[in-house]
Image (tube, rainbow, N blue to C red; front, side, top):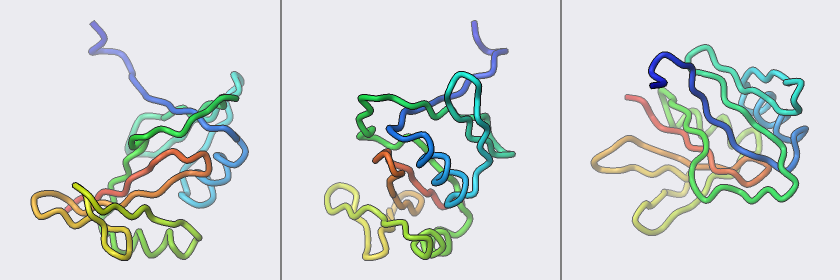
Length: 126
């Protein structure tokens, strides 16, 4: 039914200005203001993603954005230098001191949060 349509996803934040600074300046993504009061994240390799303000925003308890990177060690180091703190997990998923999960049967991953508390992941694309 929708196989010929453009599809995209979105998520909420509590502060659109903070989101614009974070996604644009820290992550270096292209941001477009939209007349309906939301932002669109753009990347040359993917479809746009919508970020919209929500007064009663609750951070997602799941990953809202995945970013494939070539070298996770370098990407983590670059984001740490910009003040990003990586999540530490010690359960089914375990991270090392740098915040990197080194799965035996999968890719290396690392998670951090945006200013609204939404979870973002880096995934090493080998």
